Image 1 (cartoon, rainbow, N blue to C red):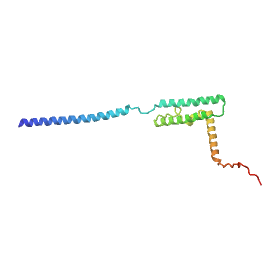
Image 2 (cartoon, one colour; image 1 turned 180 degrees about the vertical axis):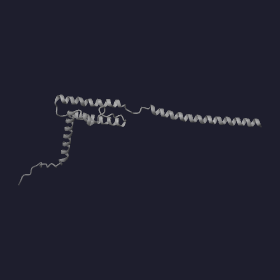
Image 3 (spheres, one colour; image 1 turned 180 degrees about the horizontal axis):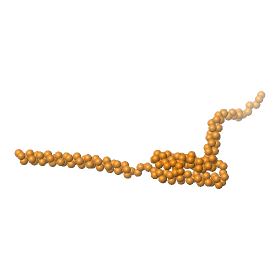
Image 4 (tube, rainbow, N blue to C red; image 1 turned 60 degrees about the vertical axis):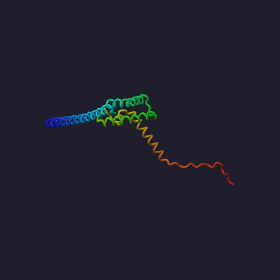
Amino acid sequence: MDSLIIVFGLLLMLAAIVMVISFFQSEQRNQLRKIYERLTQLQTPQHHEDPETLRLDRTAYLDALVLLEAELHSSQREFLIPDELNTIDATREMVKTINTKLVDMNEWMGAPFDLKWAETLERLPTLRRLYLNADSQMHVVDVEAEAQPETPKLEAPQHPVSPT
């Protein structure tokens, strides 16, 4: 009977050891799964742009305006054509977008490295003057078009009536 108790005790200890080992194995498997999920998230390319790349893109957009300023200055032209106005508007939107991204990323360094749109336009005096003039003229035309009420046109009769 004593041997039966010893065998039963050994089997009970063996069962307890198996249960402890399986518990630690399952915990380790869960921890490895969590680590794998984190690594997968880190390795997926997230759309974070490099601040230097953003600054280079902004400089490329602004180069077109600097060339336009030089052309206006050398040709003594006092007006902007619609394509130039569209280029300025597109550049304005891109510069503001890039500046917003830099501020959101806490990479805004301020002058002289990062300039707001108004500060950039101040450094291009001829372009600024012509752009603001063109913008104000377009605004005046829009206001005049809204101010003029449409009057119904009176049409002359097709067959004149002869007085009798």
